[in-house]
Length: 256
Image (cartoon, rainbow, N blue to C red):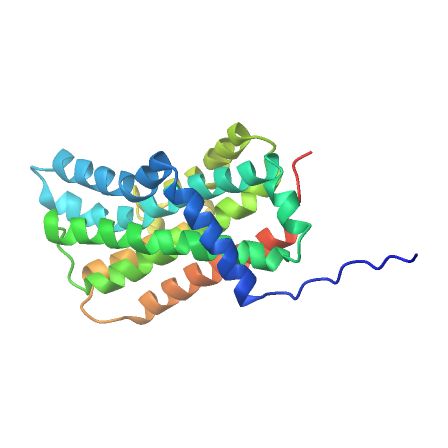
């Protein structure tokens, strides 16, 4: 009796993507520590920063908006990379990909699930910063929310991508110094990018976190949407989509 290989699933199916997203959200909801890390830690860090600079509110205004973009990116990177790796090492990913589920469905489902979490995370952090902690923003807080959300999605995409190269959760965490810390140092948070050495400035120009910080600063300083703000938003969004595509291309069924 001849056997026929199972048909290859379509590149992207809305039904399979939504089912994957719902499964991931259920798993997140059952882990109180992950929920706390995703939703509360950025708010706690922003609040701590506000009171560290209690005597210098202008300092908080200067860096608070930037950190609204950086904190979600870091937390989403950390949680996504570990969660994806855990699915691979437990064999869940291998079982899922043996079903009529394409890599695109899986990556899109993860992005959708963590994107939903990112919306809540960004709403909480932005609302607390602007209305509870008194962050002085000239532009619309909704634009701050938009950039924070895109930064969180970028962190999700980076986490999905690097999880393909880690063999353990410890290795996934080790990618943070390699992927996140250089961007943190060169994004303009500590030293203005145009005051850096030419080589470092050129390097910062190709790192997406630099544009995340620039976008936040545009909202901080201008009442209207500027051309630079639109450029920054498009670059961050484009980087997130590019890294998601790379994540789908490098996704493996299991960790060797």
